Length: 466
Image 1 (cartoon, rainbow, N blue to C red):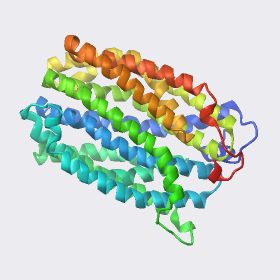
Image 2 (cartoon, rainbow, N blue to C red; image 1 turned 60 degrees about the vertical axis):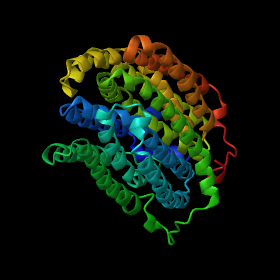
Image 3 (cartoon, rainbow, N blue to C red; image 1 turned 60 degrees about the horizontal axis):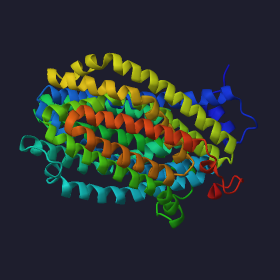
Image 4 (tube, helix red, strand yellow; image 1 turned 90 degrees about the horizontal axis):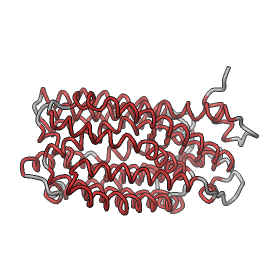
């Protein structure tokens, strides 16, 4: 009978001798599978949402697609914030400092409220102007503004949900947040259907449905973290102080700020690319939106493996086991690349069938099929970049990888898009994307082969020096 997930994680935290390869592989898979299920269900939810809007009109779908990159920007900032605290939780749990991990979480929740309110205010201010900045036609500006405004109002919910989910995952409890994310996807479909069709709210209904689902999930996530988790529940501490300290905020900033900067600049590049796509017309915008949703089916399993990599590398660092950090990194890399290569092959084969499920527009189906088949060739490189980046996040080394991402997207993708889009249209945009992902994957693989990312300052089990 094999070891359970908790027993295997215990070996990591205790710096267990020469842990066998099969045990490391088993642990990586046990942590990856729930995360992959949650990630794929999230994409299925987005595809169903897109299909609902697509069956209303191409303009409705294009309106959401137009602001999607800006939503990713804000979502990326929320994710970076959560990582700044979640990685510290992994380090402390790996070192056996459970009280310290809970202290990090409490400070993350307090700081998260402040951060999210500021981000919410910014989103509400720019919402009326955003579609015009992106060069949209008047036919979709109103719906695009409405969708982004509602999303902005819900940012505090997104941030608190992210802090709780990241903390649970980094402690090794991936099952609970994954189950709650699957639940959120189901709730999103139900509420979107009600608001879009029964309440006849269109684009606004899609936004409201998503935020209601997020709110219910946030409640479940906070309850699981604060009251139920055997390691992290707050009742284990005699005193619960939520006042942030400079030491934890400084480390959260050192981890999260490079990620935030990278997400901001990368999404600004995506927004620039969206402004190149916008004049190509609503068919191109809709095909691009649907194509991104479908492609997510390929790379979300990679993000599931990446979540496991962050947890395992982070806890290995807390336990001062550099050899564990390297072995878990390469096991995760091989697993992620293998899965996404298979997914890319399936996407190439079934691209027209999937596009037909999302929209009845023949022109959108044809264009969407072409761009998906272009992107299928880049999935292995994308997998390498996704997993390696998460390895570096788990190690707390985010500056150089973030700069690598920035260089790739601006030097390779944006310049290639500017060169190819005028003559090849949306197909040229996706050729540029595929080329950039291959280059990025190669760069991250080379970085992973070096030793600097896994440096441990003090090989004791004191988490403060991890």
